[in-house]
Length: 177
Image 1 (tube, rainbow, N blue to C red):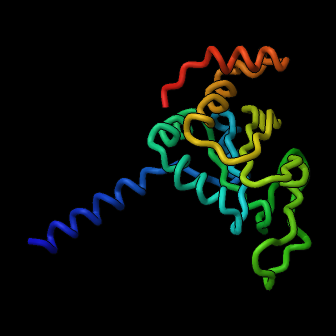
Image 2: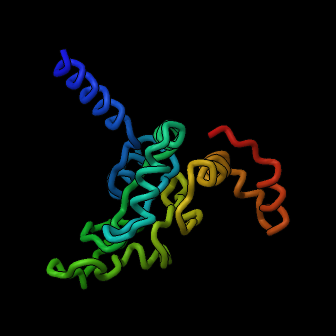
């Protein structure tokens, strides 16, 4: 009986973990945009970054974040020190100085450099035509990320053009996460 209960717990835990964000590569997201335009939400991380791992566990593991991102965005997971080729707006970005023998930090991918990402983690939002909207550096809780997810999805970011407007937007924002 104990073995059956343990087996059921393991199966249900696996099912819960399997219901995460539907991550894809940037190339896959750009291709998907051609068929069904949708904004892109990108997690720019590195393998050695502690706050990146916290973001994965605490924020990207949150049920409401998962549901909102999967419904409203193409979600991209991008290793800023990886070797993926990214074909973006007529240029193929690579990481020519990547050293597979190196432990810890490695060279920055040219796509991360082109997006002006200088801190990890950083989330980057793209329009439904692939153009960059904004990079948001730093670890965010689900509630801290919610305002960016919703503001960009609704295009409210187009109206927030001053520091005062941003303060007012934050003050009036109603959290649901």
